[in-house]
Each structure stands twice: as C-alpha cells, then as structure tokens.
Amino acid sequence: DIVMTQSPDSLAVSLGERATINCKSSQSVLYSSNNKNYLAWYQQKPGQPPKLLIYWASTRESGVPDRFSGSGSGTDFTLTISSLQAEDVAVYYCQQYYSSITFGQGTRLEIK
Amino acid sequence: QVQLVQSGAEVKKPGSSVKVSCKASGGTFSSYAISWVRQAPGQGLEWMGGIIPIFGTANYAQKFQGRVTITTDESTSTAYMELSSLRSEDTAVYYCARGGEGAAAGTHGYWGQGTLVTVSS
Image (cartoon, rainbow over all chains, first blue to last red; front, side, top):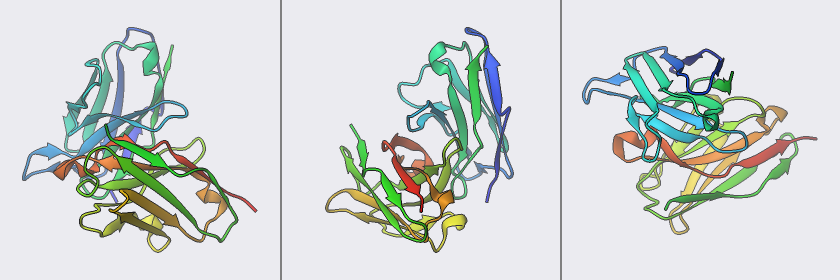
C-alpha cells in the first residue's frame, strides 16, 4: 500500500495569513501515460463528511474558493490556503488514488 | 443534484455482522464508483473498498479482505457494505462516497451523511 504522510499534524495560523499543509507519498502517484498526479485533498469539519477540495493535485473542485490551491508532483504535495478565513478551521486530508486508495493521517488547522 | 442517503445508526454485539445501505439519487448510478470509508471516533479516514456497479466486482483494502462485502442493487440505486466478525475496534462512522468519472473514480465529490456503528457487549 502507498503510505501518505502529512505534516504538520496540527497548525495554527492567524486570520488572513497563509496556511500550508504538506503531504508525502511513499511512492510516486504520477501516472506517466497521462502525466497526472493521482492526489486529492479534502476538508472535514466536525460532524460532517469530508468535502473534496482539490483533485489531480491542483484542480479545484467546482465551488471551492480560489484561496485554496494545490501543488506538487510525484511524491511531494502541498495544500495552500492563501488567506485564512474563520470558516477554514477543519481537518484536512490528502488521499492518493494511484494504487487502491489511501488517506493521510490528517492535519488539524486552527486559528492563532 | 447527486445525493447519497445512508441507513440509520446500529448497535451490534461483538462477533456479529452489520449491513449498511447507501441509496443514491440524481445522476447515473451504474457508471460511478462507490467507496466505503470509515472513521473511528477522533481518528482519520480509512478506505475499506469500492465497487463500480456496472462492472459488479468490488475491490477491498487488504486490511478488510475476508471480512467486508460490498454489493450494489442497480434496480434501487443502492450500495451496501457488510462487515462481519465485528469487534470493538470497528466502532466508527461509516461513509459511502461516489467517485468521479473515468480515471477520477478515486476522487470522492459526493458523500453520504454517515452511519454510526457501535460494537459493544
């Protein structure tokens, strides 16, 4: 199985500041035949199911604010929130779908 | 608008089985993958397995092989997840989620509301 490791486990950022969450896969999730990274990001708020934010490592899901962006390739990926809003407090998960499906352990994002 | 509605909470004894349903509405049911993901209290997300109804063959995470069965009923647009030999560690919220098209089958844009399964003697 591909192991997904996120860092940090938790993060506190001031409102309006940038938040950065990292995700590393134990093997590449870049599929050479279509040059796509099989990597998604989700946001989960308490008592709710996860919400898809980003897929193909950098494609924003419809309706997701443009302050959310994804980057990276191969084994190293980043989710960036450019200007933190109060409603962004949540746990964020990366997930690979290159080989079966596995999630990272989650990163808890709070307001400083 | 795609909606996934799951069956209600369950309380089960250790050693028994549970079967959770997930009824889809809006959109095409047969062509999209349905995954089952669980979340133990205060823990992260864990993929259990998935199925594309039109193909009918489920794939399971190695951890759950032999203990989980995922099926679908295309006539009612419903997916099912049955977990057997329950133990206390299986206490969790179980979610169904719909995948995207084609190569994006592993991205989950739609989720059910979750079903709490409590395993307790």
